Amino acid sequence: MMKNKLLTVLLISLLLSSCSVDNGTVSDVTSVQTTTVTAAESETALAESTAETSVTEEETPVEITEEEVIVEITEVSAETEEEIEEDKFVPERRNVSEDNIFIDFTFEYTDGVSDIGELGEKAEKFLAESEFYTEYSEEQITLLKERIESERKFYNENPDSTLPVYQSSLFEYFDENDRVVPHLYKAYPYDYDGDGSEETFMIVNMPYCFDRTPCLRNYLIFADSSGNMSIIDDFSYVEEAQILDYGICRHIVFGGAGIMGADSHTVLFGVKDNEAVKHYYGRLGFEKDGCLLGAYGWQSTGGTMYYDTSAREYRHIVGETVSAETLKEMDTNGDIAEFIGYYENNEVLGAFLIGGKYYCLFYGFMDTGTIYTYEDGRFVPSENKAVRFTYESKYDIIHCVLDIDLNKAYDEMLSPEEAVQLMNK
Image (tube, rainbow, N blue to C red; front, side, top):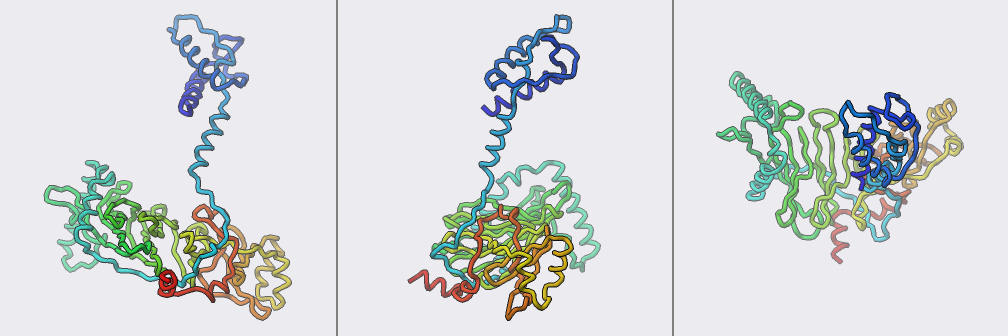
């Protein structure tokens, strides 16, 4: 039905572009009075007008009424918006799950493994049979070959050089028949969802032409516990992975600098029900403090969050709004005088109390905030990089909670090992 309506509007628009109504006769006048008709009437009018206008240039112009050529399109627009809304993630403000466990997770780089046997070979073949491989064109192959020859010349003239242009020379990715051959770069096998079975994230490299620029592309392939595979992301200039170990589950972070800014991104993955889950993404990096994970990125992307072990999802911590007047009353020693002065000059100042512990003061858009604690009647600067302000416009990534008792969470949080023991009781 949607396609029929859009087609109706398109055809009538084309008709109106070459004619208009003047006393019921098609003429060269360029103005038309708008009249609304139903979709059904417009479809009938289209059929009639199309049949009537199938004439030669010598024939007499046909008569068309205003109602036959004007259509109301607001219904189409409304339905189009409705379809878009169906796919849009709508974040919710939730409470911390009753049986949630705050965990002081470990956050470390991991080397992964470069050889994982048959699973690695299967991943290479999987990429070679994917749409990423089959979209190679003759032009792309030519560009890649030119790059290969350039590298060969460079290394022949500089045999002692230790300055590779890419992670490894592109000509290693072609066989004797000049076919592109994907290679496993690294694999990261763990029991990510804590069900006792191992899943694997793998980076498989393959040369690729990105906007006519030859490069080495890094394809992220996920293999579930049964070996079923899917390509879940791709990067350029991928960085080493980081593991967030909660004991009862693990998450992994991949990031790549990219060919350009828009291609740069970082992704936090986990596994749920034997499937890869994209928990968080953006052009950003992460900071850890206890059970908190802070994300900082392009155009103030990110926020302060925790992992809700019961809901198995990350949630932003919004914090409670603090008025500028309240801050002025609290700041008896002038510790935040510059913020108060800015407010008095501009009448704009944002402040949130996050977790009942950290005061986040910010001037406006693109400012992630300056963090303080309040101790013995004074604002004390904090070095906690995991705490920052989160703009409501950034809640489109994950759900959020209004606030948590952070002191209580810090006191009760468990180590990964203690979390495993608790879950096994």
